[in-house]
Length: 279
Image (cartoon, rainbow, N blue to C red; front, side, top):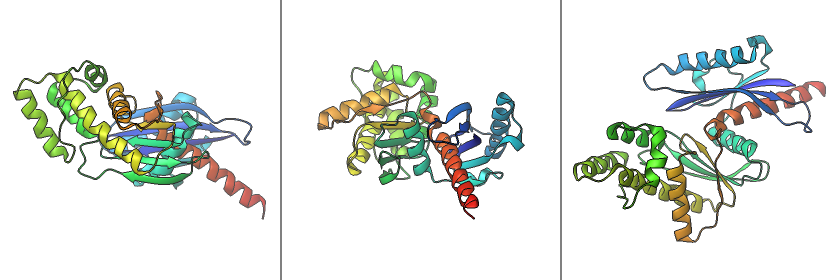
């Protein structure tokens, strides 16, 4: 049994996962400890170090007990990593860990979103990303919640209360934020504003799924994966367009990238051991 750690350094938060990686395919990897820490105005490299030592402390392990530390995202901040893996492959592998039947992934990050088509072994077949100025991102929604004076945790349920959503600009985050300011001045309710934002983001995500010719089921990962308002907006759009795709969410969806990094680290460790043994 190997012990691996995956660290996903995103733009909005840092996710850390410690996994028991089995020596044989007859056993399943097991997540023993995890952390999600928002960056806000803190130094990301300090959060990386803190989260790393916190999962060690929680499991009673020492640094010498860890067989492989893998990074994804802004991996250069993990100075003690042994290997780095691209975000698409880690989210694909993490989604497959959460739901083995996954055939497509929508990763909704702080600054961008991407749709990834995968096979039954979580291998990436095709992908499509939003543009850098997209309003379909977690950071945009978090900015709006601060302006509206609500917490991120309230967004989904409030959105579901909407009766007459006001759709915001789907082109640029700056224009979209201006739309929201105008809506508030016109007296548009918070639920209708949030549902409008969810509709805009949801439409963008559904277009990404169409672009990669996604197959069902689709697993959502990233910070907005468990936003019930966004999931509802995506389902409404797919029903309107006649798209039959099952959307899957998991309480650990935000950890998918870190989970995938830890799993790929374990896989690489096995390959290195096999290569050394064959010499």
